[in-house]
Image (cartoon, rainbow, N blue to C red; front, top):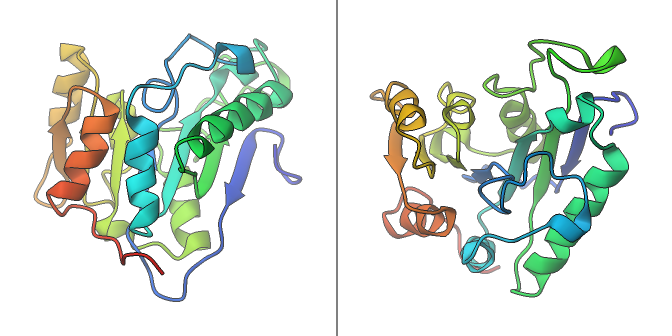
Length: 214
């Protein structure tokens, strides 16, 4: 949690002088397997190929930022200590492939949360754009050239107001239809078989253009 807000997590890298596009990623179902309320480090299962894909973004100096809803905290399934342990396990797994995350934001608030975490429509909870906007402001990101990868339409909806587009990696046809409805002249919607393919496609098609090694 942050010092100022018990329902939010915000860990962001330093801002660059010149705005750069970023890659935003959901966590569960995109970076790690979704185990339905992941709150233990021993349950972390990295999705195949995603660490190598993130490493390519790192090499191109494209910031990689996680934006994740964590209603399991609000519901009492685990706490921020569990979230911290999971993030440490993810960072360790990424480092083994020469990869890293440049930012992690999380929102625990939920309509069915317990006590003070019972907030139905917090600005940071996707599909609201609060986490993306906060990262953009604090890291000086060019959101208009940024991309998001998620496994739910709500991930893409959080980005539809300001990012160039997003890729859905869900095979659920209902999610795909919801995502397709978000497409516009300003926001492109793609689908991919998995998150590694989604990230690599965004790089190879030029949707994400990095500045190269420093």
